[in-house]
Image (tube, rainbow, N blue to C red):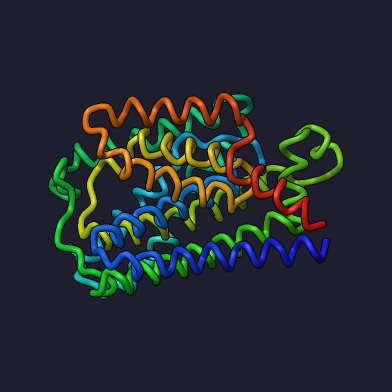
Amino acid sequence: MKQLSIVDLSGAIVVVALLALAPVLLNSNYFTGVLTVCVIYAIWAASWDFMSGLTGRENFGHSLFIGAGAYTAGFLATVWYANPWYSLPTAVVVAVAFSLIVGFPTLRLRGPYFALAMLSASAIMQRLCLIFWEYSGGEEGLYGLDPLIQSPLHYYWFVLAILVAAVAILTALAQSHWGLLLRAIRGDEATCQAAGINVTFYKIASLTISAAFAGLGGALYAHYQLQVSPPLFSVVVSITVIIMVYVGGIGSIYGPALGAIMLTLLTELLRTFGEYRLWVYTLTLMLILFFLPNGLIAPLWRRLTERFR
């Protein structure tokens, strides 16, 4: 087990080093921007996987927390003219508040109703942004956000550092007693309740942790784009994140993060196919999900590490 952990740590160092050096070697602001978006999506995917991947309660409304964090940054910048660095902790607090408001009534639901309730909540927030357009900016959203860091390269390194910290924290929680309980809830929730485990508490707590990192990623995205708009609450964002998780390997934390980076890069590389880009992308996803139902990255890494035992 000790040898395996060393291999995992070595692999993580190599991946992070490659991601950190890639924009320097390519020396392209466009590619640096693409990588920044990749890393932000990786934060969203890892945060979704912590709650839904471990407990099995799929969240179809993860964009609710992403949009909440992004709009918090937008309001702080355009309404209260606050220091942009204040938006990061504030976005985390607001996203956690949303998770508590929505989580208490919905996580008690059985079957697919939690997923549908979360999907409805994100759709309602998107609609409210359009209804109260005088405050939210309507379809155009909020513009005029200040960048956290002026240099695109330095901002990319900052976001990458947050991703590394997020994956490390979530992985440590997933491998702790907490993660064991969450997996037990996924296996047999009724047995856990019979054993005296406060299942509702652990599910709500895991949802708040997931929401905290999603809201943080939303604020980072807002300060990268320098604007926020209602599509951040859309179901498309949630489904995109879920696809990234399944491609990376659900329940592994690091797999979804790398899956998000891989798929986001793939969408950019497929631009050379022009109008056939969506066809090729969809076909690639279908082949991966059909032939590799457990994901691509996490199972592949497990097979490689077995050789070092």
